[in-house]
Length: 507
Image 1 (cartoon, rainbow, N blue to C red):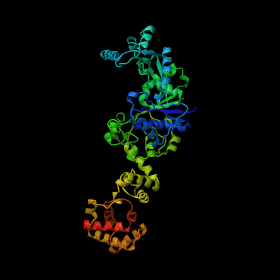
Image 2: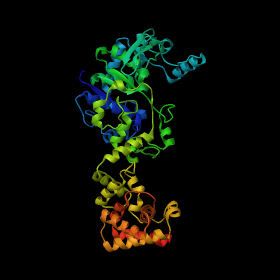
Image 3: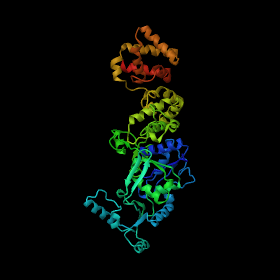
Image 4: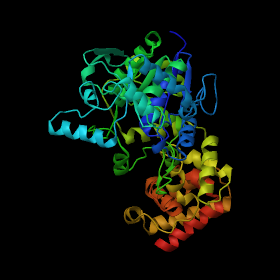
């Protein structure tokens, strides 16, 4: 394979959607699998839809997910600049060349004329109200005007756009790496605008020029761009670049959890899961949308989950770190049909990855989280908590929210356990156990268990009858980590205080 060069080319018109992250991921995996180059290009030609902060958000999102570009606005590179707004002067000469070669034309139509055209087509019940081979013959453009009239309008400063001259009777054919051969008849296509009246290129022109100049070998993008590809194929041909045209691969849609339609922010909000990788604050409404990072997802779990939405590794395994994903990735294993989004699967991945982290790493993460909650806990204690809780939680923050008893005495007790297990005999044994551990003053878990066994043996009662009550006294709950480890964590004085408290409250 030639030197692989792929690009992820988002528009800074808002936050990066999870579907965009998956597109970036498949580009990244394909590049790395083939020892190629992964490029970030910001396609900001649509200045009317530009959103402040969106470009920075895109860059930070990719960094968090571990997909740092080889070339881009931050890294630079020999094919820059990597923002289309900084390449504006490049595009006009190619648009002018297309006009000169008869492959594009000037269109001077006013908004009113365009609307009148669409109205007439609607009234005639024409399905596609578009500017094409049929309608252009009745419009104000350089195909219907004389050369003198065209020049006069340009000299007068009349606004114009440059449109592609799509052949009416030609079939455009191309091969998609995922979908096979695709054929489209020119008569069904619109004469797309290539250069707008403000001199800025549209996506169609800028995309092709930049991909050519940046020597892009493979265009891997969302399914929504499939209808535009025949236009792009024509542009490669018309500009004389057909021999260096990249291969195309159009990715399947991410679908709603029920599989019925494309996944949207509204669906995510409805089902209570994030749609963006990081928190996003809308600069106009000042509304905050929660991101995967801030929701507690680990980047490697997030990437593993995302990789399997539309691609399969060809085996029964589920868990792959980024290096394994690169090794296994094959574009032939991307499915054509849409992939249903299942947030429960995302949670499962996070749980698996969290369990594999060291106690030290999780303890440091928990320590950082507790600072945001203004909870004072030294890092050594956080490491202990991580060792207790890592098998019992899905997210790091749950090590705190699911075990607040580790930080403060319980002020209530699980009624179910109280009604089922608590009685005077249990209270008596708890007090005996409290006295013994206080006298012994040894918080080694093994020693604590021996002391408890000696108490229940003396009373002739089964361990199963008293253990839930001791746990209840210490934590207020009916379940949790190893009880002796919990006592060791609290220390003898705190543990005794909690047991005495519970006996006094519950009688």
